[in-house]
Image (cartoon, rainbow, N blue to C red; front, top):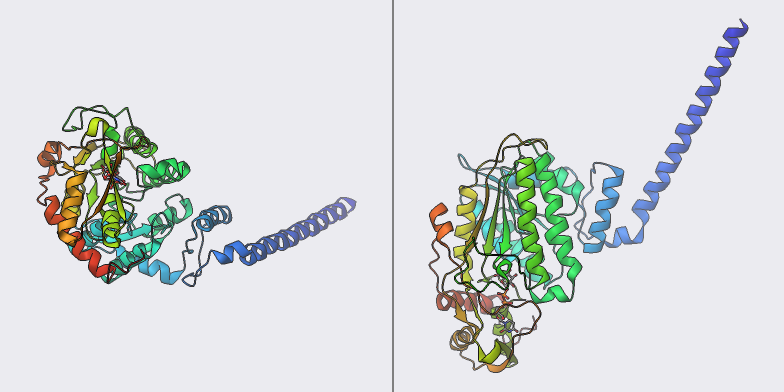
Length: 436
Ligand SMILES: O=C(O)[C@H]1O[C@H](OP(=O)(O)OP(=O)(O)OC[C@H]2O[C@@H](n3ccc(=O)[nH]c3=O)[C@H](O)[C@@H]2O)[C@H](O)[C@@H](O)[C@@H]1O
C-alpha cells in the first residue's frame, strides 16, 4: 500500500513538473514568436509582396531571415508561393529539363531563362535582387520573365532553408548557376561580397545539390578572368589559370577548384563556362560598353584604358545570343550526376569551356562603333590601365566548346552593339535625358 502511495505520489510529482515544463516551454516559444514577428528589422525587410510562410524550422528560418534582412529581399513560402514555384518549374515538352536558374534576373540569367522556357523546359528563377547596379533594371527583367512564364523566387543562394524548400518542392534535373558578384574593379571596394556570393553561395548551392535525390547536373558561370596574367593567346582551357589579377578572378578560379571537389567526392556533374566579356540588350550597367553609351549621350568624358607604351587594351567581346547558345549546348550535353543523397556512386562528368567570340576588339574601336551608332562624338580621355584587376587582353580559343556541342559565335561587335543601342534607346526612352 505504502509502496503504491509512493508510486502515485511520484507519478503525480512527475506529472505536475512535466505539465509545468510544457507550460513554460509554450510561454517561451510564444515569446520568441512575438519577438520574431514584431521585430522592426524583420518587418522592414518585408515588402508588400511578403507571403505567409511555412518554414521548415525555427533556427533555419531565423538564419535565412538574417540573410534576407541584410539583402532587403522579401520572404517566401505559403501555398500560393508553392503553387507558383511548381507551375513555373513544370516541363511542357517531351524529354524537357527542369532547370533552376540562379541569378535569373541578371543579364545572362534572363536571356537563358527565356530561351529554356521557350523550348518547353521547366524553369524556376532565383535572384536576390541586390543593389550592385540599378535594381529597377533587374525588376524590369523580372517582368519580362513573368511574361514568358518564368517565376523568379526572391532569395539568396546562401539561404539554405530556402534552397532546401525549393528542392523539396521540385525535382530539378539541372541547375544553371549564374548568381554571382560580377565586376572586376568593384572587388577592391567590396571584397566580401565576392566571398559571400561566389564562394560561400556556390558551396551552399552545391551542398543542397549533392544531398538532392536525384542530384541535378550543374552548369555554372566561371569567367575569362581566370586566365589572369597568362600571356599565351588565344586562351585555351589547358593554359595556366593560377595567376588571377583580381579578387573576382580568384573567386571564380576558387569556384573551379570547388567544382572539382564536389565532383570528386559526391559525383556531381559539373560544367564551368568561362564567359568572355558578354554584352547585349538588357546588359549590365557596370560594364564599359553600357556606361560608355550612357556617358557619350550625356556628353561626359569616356575613360579609355591603354597599356604601357600606349599598348592596346582589347577584349574578346561576346554577344549574348551566342552565350545563350553556349549555355544551352552545355546543358544539353551535361551528363547526369552519379551520386544521390550525399553519396557518390561512380565517376561523374567535370568540364570547363571557353565561351568567347575569338576576335578581340580594342576598346578604342568599341568607342568608335558606339560613336557611329549613337551619332555623337565621344569625349575620349585616354588613361593608363589601372592596376586594380584589369588585364590588357583577352582572346578565347573555343575549339573545345565547338567540338563538344557545336558552339559557333556568329555576331560581330558592330552587329551586336547595334542591337544593344536599339534596346538602350527604347528602354531609357529619350536617352539623353536618362538619369540612369
Ligand atoms: O569576361 C570576363 O571574364 C569578365 O568580363 C567583364 O569584365 P571586363 O572584360 O573587364 O569588362 P568591362 O569592365 O566592361 O571592360 C571592358 C574593357 O573596357 C576597358 N575599360 C573599362 C572601364 C573603363 O572605364 N575604361 C576602359 O577602357 C577595360 O579595361 C576592358 O578592356 C565583366 O565585367 C566580368 O564580370 C566578366 O567576368
